[in-house]
Amino acid sequence: NSTINPSFNSTINPNFNSNFSGLILYELSLNKTAYFIEANDKILLMFDFGNNYVGFCVKAKASFYNVFDISNNWIGYLISNKKTGFNYFSTNAEWIGFLI
Image (cartoon, rainbow, N blue to C red):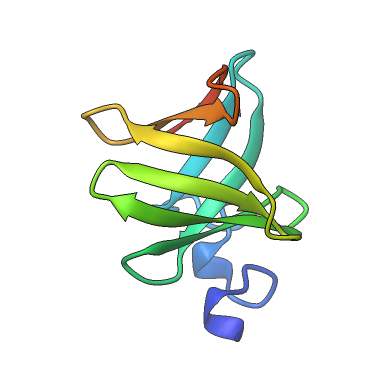
């Protein structure tokens, strides 16, 4: 589906759209590692900055998403920061990044 594929739709690609409104994943070292496209109100698609699909997030409740890799392995979770983003934790509850 080209409407949710950043390789074909530059409006959802932060490499080409300076007004990108999706979430960006930062490591704790402040390096950008991925960005997220909203597929619907319950699913976020995760892409690296080479526009490779690398995972997805499933909303479990209003302030919580489970994160999965492309093999459907659970790799972490997102908890709302009560502002405009999320804190990203590994499956063993280690804080590994944040999304804004």
